[in-house]
Length: 407
Image (cartoon, rainbow, N blue to C red; front, side, top):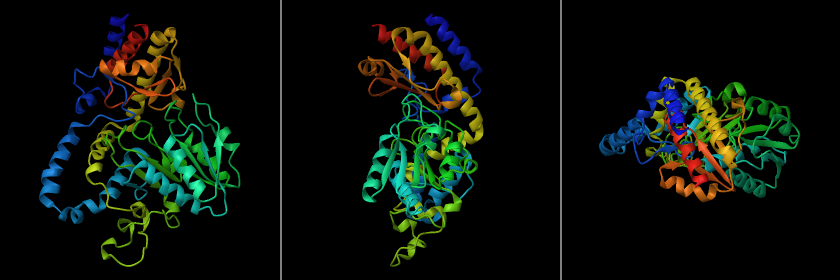
């Protein structure tokens, strides 16, 4: 059986239109890592990024020194934001910027959103949203005497349009949802969620952390109001690389984020008394942008721009379908259960499987070079980054999980 499975994986890899992309990543030929199945938590670095960062240290930082701010760095968050918008967000220029962490940008966006809906008293969020999102909203609700209206969604699925319709009302100021659920991988109907939210007169804020770079996005045509996402997963920006924020153009004249800093002020180098927000998306910037941290993002965006998001999504679906086929064949007879939507149209770029022994065997898998992600109470999350993950890795990883379960 093992020989046949690996032969099938080799056949799929040979037919993969994106197979050449794998060699572009650092560590893809590391024999100590048999299967990296956590690309949705931290993506591999591109070799081009290693070169870019090295030359930046010696040439731009070491050679141009402070002159770099006038020559490029001051505008880099907006420049890369526009590149991000065009390549993976489905958005026109002038609506996205890079900087801060997901947590900080989520706070800025949520606070700015509720100020756009004065007199409304509720924020809608689901119980299975990522912890940071829930905690930030709990903090805002407490500080501003607002009520959190919780959606009790299926942990093996996500929030449907019908469930959202049942909780939004004339009291709703803001709806905050993950586009791809961090645990189950459920893919939200974003256009439907925006329609329901707007029918109630509220604003929609999407968390794109588990979808950007894996699932095609059309923020402008979906009529999403605000969005936030990280860059260290499918965009391969590196540990702690800065997040991005999207503010729909029609809101920017009235939108005000709450963390006022000098880099988001009109004419910041005037060092003038009193804060006046910059025009457009630049007002989302507060302090000095993390220039070094945003370098690697450009290389992944350039690669996605060459191959196209349609090809990335097709590979993502093929990888998750193949992994679930193996789970059904090899792991379900051992008591494993699929905790993700089985319809690929309702699933993002990762799947989760549940078994009572997964907490116990995760460390053993890591020690043998198979690296998935454990999610309590008993879930093993298989994150499949389309540009860097091979079908052979998936097969080797699932076979290793099987071996540990029967050991």
